[in-house]
Length: 315
Ligand SMILES: Nc1ncnc2c1ncn2[C@@H]1O[C@H](COP(=O)(O)OP(=O)(O)OP(=O)(O)O)[C@@H](O)[C@H]1O
Ligand SMILES: [Mg+2]
Image (tube, rainbow, N blue to C red):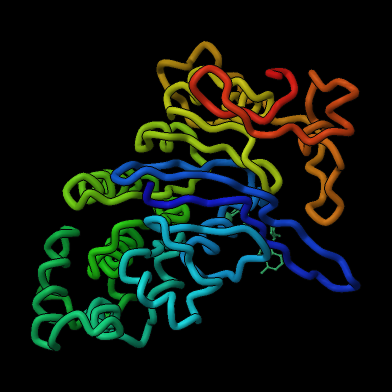
């Protein structure tokens, strides 16, 4: 197994002794050479999980193993650098994540320099090759980020993340800041690179149809925990957890196969605060099938018909 996440916790202290549980006991295994899509409403903890995986957040509890080796707490640990060659992240906002005062050549060669993978001349050569790989011109290496469009900047972000030839890449909403017209191009580019490089991707997104299209597995998070996980088509076309059902029904993007089910309805009820989590199932207040037990006992993620579901309905 490439990545094994075991009961991962990430808590934030948010003042006056209050603790926010952003990721609350996530266990997940990710197989090599696959794309795992991670979905869930805003605030469910997707980015926090992704950042903890790449070492941008210290973990509050639990363990992440990479090829069987436990990853150190954060990337500041000297140890993490050994792994950082293999683990990268692509961010949502391609403008904010590229240093505006650096040329594209400096941006692309920096990760290689940090890792001392090759000589300066070789790094320049790799940067030029990567410009072509992401359909940009090597002649533009001397330009600055503001001279490129949003879609082009995200291509540069992708090239920067992949230039060190990582194995595992967390893509945090890599297309949501882009115009709809260029979203498909960037998705297809990522899909092609995944295949040609044998990459493993954790692909975080809001758009369920997009996630279904690109992913092998789909993981659904709600308030810091996984509620459902399985083959992407199964979860999308036959959601089983009441939250996944509601999420699929509220997915605004039309999908011809689903047209009849498309209701554009919003999920009812309020999301509880991750500071004061209910003792039982986190979805209980919004679920129309909740029983008494759901109020007191948190359902565990367990295998049901070829997938994993955390819901007492399937006990
Ligand atoms: N640095 C931080 N300090 C305090 N709270 C944080 C911090 N980062 C995230 N949170 C909180 O943790 C929870 C999970 O946030 P996170 O950004 O991981 O959600 P998300 O699923 O990525 O949402 P979105 O879809 O909006 O990107 C939220 O309640 C958020 O307010
Ligand atoms: Mg996020």
